Image (cartoon, rainbow, N blue to C red):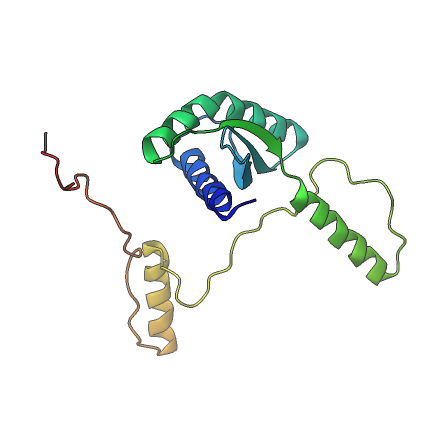
Length: 183
C-alpha cells in the first residue's frame, strides 16, 4: 500500500465513523465502531470493517442497517471530502476483539489451573460494560455537586469545586470563505 492510500483509508475511517455516530438515526445501528477501511489502489472499492458489541442477531441487524445506509454515507462523504472518486463500500464484521477476548479467557483458565474448553462460548464473548468510576478532574454533575459540597462542609474541606459541565466547543454556523459571497 502506498502512503496516499493509507492516508485515504484513515480519513475514510474517521469520516464514516463520524457519519455513523452523528447522522444515522436508525435504531438498529447500536454500538458499531469502524475499525478499519482498506481501499484498492485505484480508489474504486473499499472494504469497511465494523466491530459491533452485542449478540449475533444484533450484529447481523446492525450490518444490515449499515448496508442500507451506505448510499447515504457515500453521498455525505462526497460532500465532505475532496476526492476524485468516492469508493464503493463492502461491509465486513471485524471479530478481532472477540478473538482477543477469547485468548484472554483461555490464558486466565490456564493460569487458574483449569483445562480450557475448546468450544467457543455461546452468545456474546465480549466483556459486559460497567459504569465508569469517578476520577479526579472529572466534570461534576450539578446534583452530585450539591451532595459533595454538603459532604465537604461536614468533613471540613473547603476547597471550591467548579460547578456544572465542562465547556464544549461549538463552531459557528457560518464561515467566511474567501472569494465567496454570503447568501
